[in-house]
Length: 165
Ligand SMILES: [Zn+2]
Image (cartoon, rainbow, N blue to C red; front, side):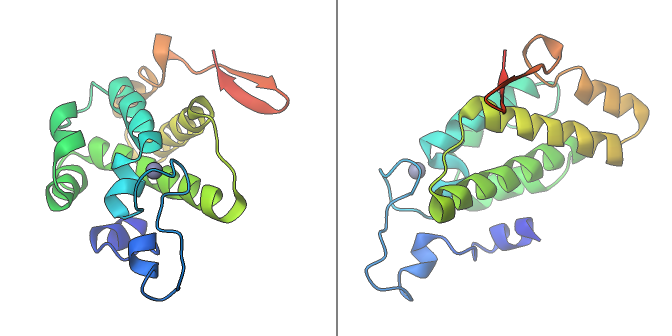
């Protein structure tokens, strides 16, 4: 459902809400640098770019567009590239945009900002869980072998916040 809303650019981001809510701060709640539209939330915010860099680099075995194309294409091209064809790419894209939206909502509604490593670890855990649920054993091993730097994910609890090591 999120992907459908995303494809149609109808999620309640500032560019959608500003006509309905007077005096709404137009800036992104995470970077406070640019107006919040769909592209900014899901790809162009520095916060999102950092996560995409880590996700795409840790899933290089999956057929995907180059980083240059991924980071610079227009909205329609970006959506077409990531929602069609290769199932692994669609899964990685779907899980990552879901986490981008979740993190954006935490920033807007709860004034919470998660560290990139925390977000990446949770996201990677979800990718592996999705892989285990929807793919055959051979593909599952392919995803598991590339979940993080060094080929495994190790969580260390510091004040109950898991961090990558
Ligand atoms: Zn931003």
